[in-house]
Length: 425
Image (cartoon, rainbow, N blue to C red):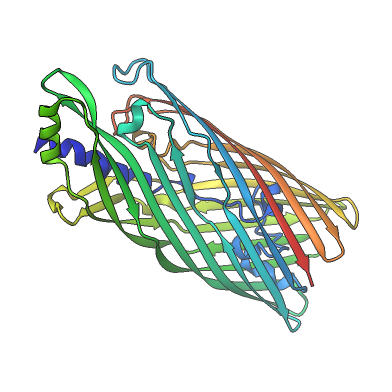
């Protein structure tokens, strides 16, 4: 039974700590907005307004199709804490992966005051896949969270264009895949060995949410925008499969095999947070649009996670997490260079909500500082926007407080390239 618990409880910890964190929230839903550091709630002048501030659709008086994606590459390095006898001297880093969250939008005006549209985007995502072998494989070797949202939207503005309001339902689908190894002490030779690998795959599940926004122009050169994307909780049903890893010791392998948990259904839930955006923009400087946004990320919904096992319910688990709500600060600028070209600059500072105790291989989150540069080109009905965004995670240490008993220091950097193609009609 003790061996059984040794195998199963790390699986529970993996599920509990891998499905949440601001590191999973993505705002790369449009190249122009990303180039402005995500400060777009008061500008919202292309179809990606469906994501950033749906009220901005109303000011767009031409039909448009916009589509593209963001190419994301992460670099992460772990260094074991020299004061921890278990992790001292160990290192680790991510496998090389390229992720491409897509986005696509279509909008069309109706009459003089209404615009309708539909958008597809990825509001959350994660892949932390560590090169093997590494010591952290007993906590997590791979975690993969995928989401996609579809949102039909409608926006209306007053005849003078000074005030607009919009909204729409959001249909979100998500999936979770996790993998890790389990180890045990071999009593016949006194050595610790890998004895099993666990793979958990949840089916795609969905939930409905909603999104609203307002846009106000108190003067020709000033704009104020606010939007809110509602929280939602998605319930997952998955299957946990544990595969034995032979150690070469027949007696020990037989003991392990007799106590391995069977393949069984597992259920859990992800409480995705709600987001509130407030932006102020000005065009008081000729040929420049400058915007500052404040974004509230309500991760305080995540107090604890309960995981249920269908076949072995005695191993059900509830883990406290106690995330905190955070703010993101975004600053962006767009410089018009004539009828065909724009250049854009952006900066972002994003606070993380993760307590030090739960920083680990599944989510080595940290406060983030980013800078972006982008260009926009238009020729007739065609347009292209391209952005380079560098994101630096401040080094994060577990400070010998890891709840996974895996202490060390994480350094993460990301490079993101977003491209959108559009056609106006």
